[in-house]
Image (cartoon, rainbow, N blue to C red; front, side, top):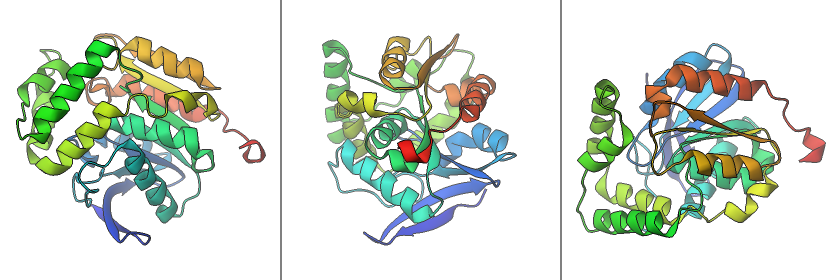
Length: 268
């Protein structure tokens, strides 16, 4: 699928994305080290009923990077600018991992831009041990010590070799500096908008795998319990890349989420 280029007039930044279909907009934001192609199972499924737009996060795919060291709020501002530049009005928004943090932040602070919010394998208020581990990994990546084997082993079951190989190619292709910036924002951002999740009034779903050690079912349940109209889904037998490894299940749950009535505009 050909990439489309968008220019953010406020900052002159280039954003690339994949678009297919027509109808109510469904915007997808991937995680650290990935690219818009990671959403192919969702693009193929939902393009029959929606205008599906899969964005390349800053410094990933063909999108321009944010300044080195940019925190999570900078990525949320980026997403706000992209949605405004698309000119489609409020959108259904889905994020995976780091993308889930962005979607959560935007849904909590800019309800006028988000019709529905879905978080796949999202993190929320890590415990001290997990927090220390991910911050240490961020420091190693910033220092140029990139270990791809460890996250791949953590993300996939042994029988998911095809998806694992595909993800490995994306991780290898990403710009190291942009990878470090995004990973640091991911490491530090698990609590940035946590106190504002109770402000999320749109239909909200948090989906994860029961084998994901870092984006746990307990985190999904907590996020869903805070949102005003939230639900949590745990997919059995899968880990971190559920949009690829459990695409049929994920698509079915997202289909149900998209059927939920949007909050009336006058109440937003």
